[in-house]
Image 1 (cartoon, one colour):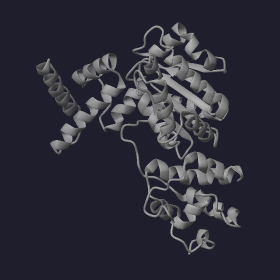
Image 2 (cartoon, one colour; image 1 turned 90 degrees about the vertical axis):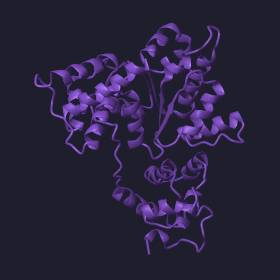
Image 3 (tube, rainbow, N blue to C red; image 1 turned 60 degrees about the horizontal axis):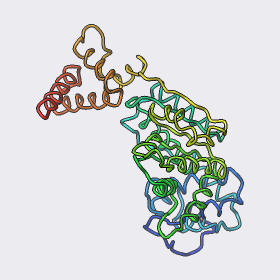
Image 4 (cartoon, helix red, strand yellow; image 1 turned 180 degrees about the vertical axis):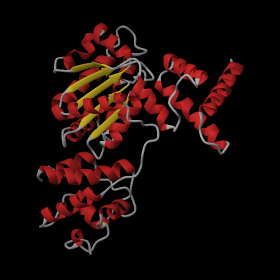
Length: 354
């Protein structure tokens, strides 16, 4: 019998074979009285299951206990020996390893820089605003950071054009796991502050420039949305990374009133490089098992150069993937000839549709 189950009552979890539904804000209140290592241990397992959409039964199997034990733990019913219980879960956490990789993520120098910025913003509980041209891979990197640093520690929201204030707040709440149905707006906000204020959280808001699009000159919605981000920072004291295209830089200048309160809070403003480094391009090419480009592949070199100049790394990734698919269908080792062939085929289709 697992040591976590020694004191487990003989009951069946009400969440057996279903996603446990203890709300995140309630969970944070439940664990508030524990010491920090114990909180982090329980937070890891709680949000791991939430993020993966696992049933309580599956989560219990992975961490080596029973669904009944996890059910009462997440409700705050620890029993007498909470130290032993958390120690066993901490050991299970140390032994836990996920084998799931993101095929779209390549650890480039840009990715390493963004990861360091996010880590620093979290550690200092400050606000960072980053902007860069489209297609350099910002969103892929941020989503991978969230994946690697989740388990309740990272909340990620990607903005949509013309979001209303209510849509913005509701989307933030949903990203943090806070239910919005049958909740008053004020109640939902309070729950969001509770979740973001616990456990050294980091809030990432991607595509922030979208909030400023399709607005009339007198529309103050972006001001209210940015003011809400300021309120989150003041109330929850969590780090915030706000990211957009170079249009965001323009908004910092042209619409200072929208971001003034955030800028007054020691915000770091970072401009990302407009072009990938030669080292990063090599990393992308190597990821697909292709040889380094040189004078022996003039046609492939010209295509890659044109893609990077016109569309960026995101499009290069798609075209490299198309070439890999072409090689796989032919049951052949991927070479630059497959890349060129796939690129020409897609270009021909594009010309016909035009």
